[in-house]
Structure formats: C-alpha cells, structure tokens
Image 1 (tube, rainbow, N blue to C red):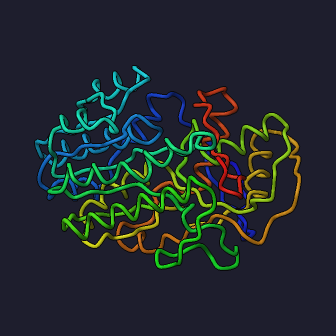
Image 2: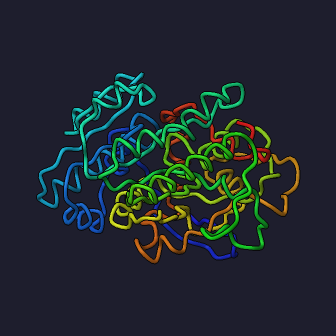
Length: 356
C-alpha cells in the first residue's frame, strides 16, 4: 500500500496501480459516464468536433461515439482538423469516428462541411502565439464569426480558458464565472475576443451556446502534473512562483463538455471546468519525489496570486470528477517511471505574464 499525504495533512492509502499502455489510456480517457450516455441519448442530431486533432479532441470524439452507441442512438460523429498527424486520423477512423480534413479559416472548405445539430468548437492557438500574433487573433477571435454563421441552427459548446480571468488571490478560492475578466497577454486577450464573438452571434442569431473556461486538463502524456513529474525525475528545480494550480482528468473534462451541450443557451452560458482542489505545486512535487525516489529541488517562493478557477457550478450540474488528484499522481508517476510516451507539449503553467 502507498500513502499519499494531502495538503490538509490527511493520508490516503491506496493500492499502487497503473495504466500500462497507450491503448488502455485511450480507453480510459474516452469512457463515457452514465450521464454522458443519458445526455447524448436524448439530444437529437449529429455531432461535429471542430479542431479535433489536438490533445483533447480525439478522446472527446471517441467518447461521443461510445456514448451514442451505448444509448442506442444512430448519429454521425465527425472530427474536423487539418490532421497534420495522420496517426490521429487513423485512430479516429478505427473507432467509428468520421474525419474531414479542413482548414477552418478557408471559407470554401468551411462551407463544404456538413451541417450538424451539435457542435463542439475546440480550434484555437495558444502555444507559439508570441511571434504569431496575427494568426492567434485569426484563430481565436475571427474564426468564431464564420463558425456561428455556418452553424446558426446548431447548439454550440465552445472551449475557452481560465486565463481570461487573469491572476486571482489564492485565498479567494478561484475565479467565478461572474468575475470581471482581466486577461494578460495576446493569447488571453484574443480568447476574450473569441468569447465576445460567440456572444454577439448567439444574441443576434439566437444560437444556443456554452463557453467552457477550462483550467487545466491532464492525462498521462501531457499536463501540469506531467510537467512537474518530469522535472522531478530529471532533478530539475521546480519553480514555485506559480504556487497553486487546478487540474482535472481529461476524461472528466471531456464528459463535462459533452454534457454541456444540453445546457446551451442564448445568451451564452459561461461555465468553468477545473479540478475541485486548489493544489500546491510544492506538495505535488513532493508527492512525485516520494513516488519516483527523487530528492526535489525548488526555486523561488509561492506568489499570493495564481490562475485558479472555481468550478462549483459545473459540479452542481454534472457531478464531481471521477478521477481524483491522488489517482492522477499515482498513474502519472508510474507512467513516467516506466518511460511512457510524452507528447512533448509542456503547459507552461508557470508563465504569469501571458506570453506563450
């Protein structure tokens, strides 16, 4: 048995277990909850995922496929992306998800996409946005306009980010959906533009929309917890300036996003998606040090402010995440220890000025 000491001083005893392969990981990430099955069982029409080739899109699309099949509903699940990685497209096709290669910024290609009653919008640009400011604004702030005009008769769940709130005092417990937005840096500012465009067209065309402010999804191949674990394993100092974070298992974030389709409204519903704990980065590093047998090095001191979100409204509607932080830490430590695949996409969670 393994003892993990939580920030409140309590100890949790659990049997050490692990996810041993990418295939089992993908199965776990795409496993629908009963609530997702119920939601997709009562919603009408096909579902299209725009920008499905990123870190979350493939498992979300597959979860939608599995949930629809379990509910006995015949619908197309269509994943749209440039699909620069052919393996991602092949993975989706192998699991019953249709694919379409498309540059969403090309009006002709966008116009050729099929209609769908349900739209998940995941397209955007964050990392590498510094130096590509024009592309960042095109993807994040311009594209929602053509999407809303194309899918004016659909319900839309659009991914946003908790970065739109800016830094908030740790003692406050996380930003609420009703808070004034104080974005820092062109990425966060352009995402506020994304939200404003969705709101404008939702009101003008009476499109039911949900804006999901996500902060931060994680699995075994990427995420804040993976970043911390990798640095501990490499004996690199852990920067404590961003001293606290929220994390949520990607499968739980996928489930909430799909359930959110039933909450779409005009004007848009705004919803935080985040883990329930305000986690200490110092504590996380120490847990990984214990599990990986490494002495942990630190630098800096915890700031009084961090990017934190309060997702209590999502929990009231959809329930709490199935996978808790202790389980994520355990799985990730085992994955890192055995040399499991890493996507090589660090979160840069320690960045405080919004420059990505």
